Each structure stands twice: as structure tokens, then as C-alpha cells.
Length: 95
Image 1 (cartoon, rainbow, N blue to C red):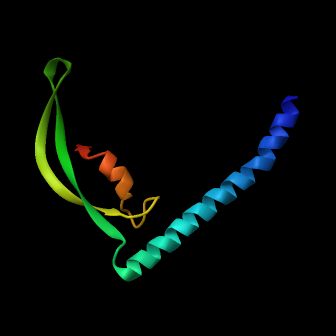
Image 2 (tube, rainbow, N blue to C red):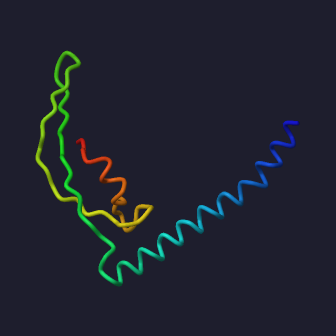
């Protein structure tokens, strides 16, 4: 019984890896077309906070300001930029 599950997982794993590689390759190809047309990047306004640890296990949070963060219009991170869909949902950056 357990051996049958292991065999099924071994058969399924290359299919899963292959699908992930094809999905990333397609996302990269679409991103390269957008780079050629100049529509690959966007900006998102992000709030930056500084967390300072104090005595007595207390923490002070300071707003450092807002900034425009460049993001990639893709499903996965491209060229060291986070995807825009992720950055729009995580607008607070902590340091």
C-alpha cells in the first residue's frame, strides 16, 4: 500500500516539475515581449516602516515615508523585481 503511493509520487513528481518549468518559461517569454514594447514594468506606492527594539521587550514602529517601488508585470519575479500583483497586496515594507 505505502509502496504504491511512493511509486505514484515518483511518477507524478517529474510531471509537476515539468509543468512548473513550462509555466515559468512562458511567463519569462511574455515578460521579454513586454520589455521589447516598454510595458514590462509598473510602479506601486509602498509605505516603509522601521521597527526598533527597545528595553523591556518593547518595539517602536516608525513610518519612514512612502516611496514608489518598481515591479514586474508578470506572474513570477523577473530581473530581481517582485511581481506587481504581490507588491500591491504587500504595501508595507519593514526594516
